[in-house]
Image (cartoon, rainbow, N blue to C red; front, side, top):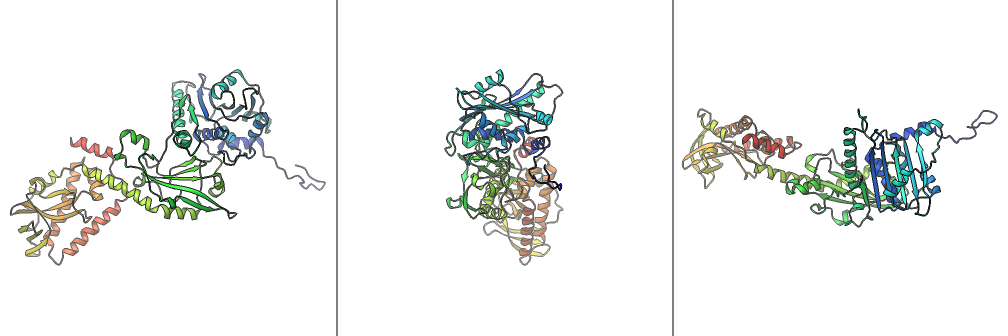
Length: 551
């Protein structure tokens, strides 16, 4: 700071405090996976065809992460510029890099020292520079370190890069693992590093799936290895089995920028098959979970956000777990979508949110319907034993109920005597030759009204008894009855309650009151469906647990 003779400030350049800022930039929200991906972005931007990542744990507990690529490489001058916080804008604006901060902030989020070694050809010398946060703290200045290339760094470069390219080394890794281990370098910490490597393979297998899939020609192909193992791509849309449901004219979005220019983004909507229609191997590929639904945002072909509805719809829930949205945009829309420094999050403008909601609402609803239809059909296959209910009713002759005078299965009418008098004629389900074990209570597939239950008279020849038919496809039967199968008393209790409702109707109805009872039955059934809308269908574990207890 400089001042004039009156003490007024004349130089407004205000350099940031090196110590506070370089340590502060460690906490920009990276985790290990997103930090590693940011370094890999630089390799792809440098036209690498192969990227090697090694995570090393030494016997004394020291940890290193090395990233090597066979890309264009840098000479000493270019390396100096690349190591600057806020590096110059790349000549290729479409590259995966954006703010000139990724390499530095990503690296320092995991380690206290990061070193970059690079060269442009086999006949040029290796250029090397490093940022060491403890060195910056000691000097309290934005000063890098220029050290000689060590023998092991040369070996790493030859192994991970080859003749040319760039090697990034993270050392003093104080934030690589989520906790400190009692025995550094011991078995527990070794297992933690192996898990970290597995998680990284899964993460970058999704992030760069278009680059890793040789059959996908939308991006140039690269190979990535973690600790020597190939990273396999995972396409979240499972196009081999899924259905893309947006019409072609709906797949392009025109977005107006602040300066009036129009840029386009693209969108496709995929409905995956129900997991019950997939083999066990296909289920592993599809990875259908609640968290897997929603938007997969791609910037320049790289996934920057996966899952969730970004304010377009509400929270994730089971009924829409089959729906995944493929959303693509280029660097030209970075400002419109407010891409963050980690390139891991975007924000939709409220107007775009509303547009996407209207565009995707039919697809969102269809995905939910497909889930429900399949789940209901599957659950309906699982039988529930209503025998104990039938035995309980048959052994209680004193229960108040109508007397059947005449039942005609052909016309579907019954003449009964009830509290309304003799010779009450009803149009009702009449079933002759019914299984004696289900005369009073039976679950059926053919109730088309949507009601949970309906009255019926069942029996043989002229001996008919009042009973109830329960709709197997109603949510109450599928979501509550099925879960209660393991508890015979719960099933019997619900059976007896519905039988009592049905028989109370039969015992107090006549032609004039029949529509009122029908309205009550419809309203109860409708309200139960609404109340159970957010209750998930029983899964395989629920159903298998019931089967085990029944056995």
